[in-house]
Length: 494
Ligand code: SIN
Image (cartoon, rainbow, N blue to C red; front, side, top):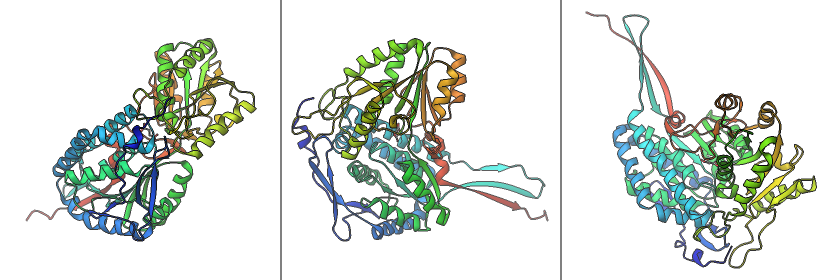
């Protein structure tokens, strides 16, 4: 890790959010400071909006809805296609902005922009395919039509760890179906959201169809969910907040989709390809410094391959380069904030106090100025038991905990022994086992010999307390559509 001055050349401070086609500040002029997690440098200020601005955003989205809904899908498709093209044009600028505010390495940020643009491209195509149906009628004088219509004003509440993809995964299908949307990005990473909104405007999205409001998360969410005009909400974030939003959605029976916490198990069987398994675990565990909902959190390794796997993983992890994400070749950036660091340190300290052994890493790095004190050495830790915090909670950091197992049944039981059910991974070369284990894992996303399953066209979402509903591909459209049944009685022939 080395000091850098790259982070000092960030974007110009700005203090505007987008409501009804107008770039505005908070009514009372308050702002939120946005800091680079790698250096703590102030990079921008954005409006600290609240309940009143949230209502104004709903007013704007409700006003824009009839015209946007009435536009043929093929026309909405063209707007989305332009939005996609602009994201591709500005990939480097967006990626750099993301690295500045979120910390992830520039190469990963570029990958996220490509991933995020993929949702826009897919939705542009899908906008033309929001099909209805006809059902054969029970009598000659009837026709039965099924219409799929946009629900109306919708809301996206998004997290800091994927500042672009979690927005486009919600916004693009909403727009494709004819809904309007209010996006509330995380306060730590609002700049990518605002840059995306600028591109949406440039692409020709009409005023009020996309609104981005920054500010007090709880106040804004409470206000949006108390408004009966909001007909669907898509949230990505913690299980705790997701449950609270679900309770609030009950008030007006607002449709809600939740992508919540994970605690992903990885099962490495004796018959796995060692290189594939190590590469898969590194890809899953260390993406975004371990700050993803689908990252490996418990790595179960069968006894026959355990020593070789632990050795190879340790070597791979030792070679990961930590530093400012803007620096060439950096693979692991900072943790997002001090609370994130405290949780990672608590998980490691608790495990060690209960007898776990550190194979690689295990400590916070002493970062040279101007870097902040927020980098954790990529870690492999062994001897994990079921009582340890790390075995029971999402760590959200670059820590790979290893647990030895003997039989397939034992590994599946341990993998499923959690209230979470977002993503799971396993590595084997036995085709029968592959099918058996894929079916037995109680998770919405399963990576079979694959540590990087996220793609725009697949249904992304979790089981149990990891969520409700699916985003991505054609599945994303469901939240934003109502199904209407028209029973049509024909007049008798005269
Ligand atoms: C997440 O961590 O919430 C999203 C990860 C992904 O889309 O791959």
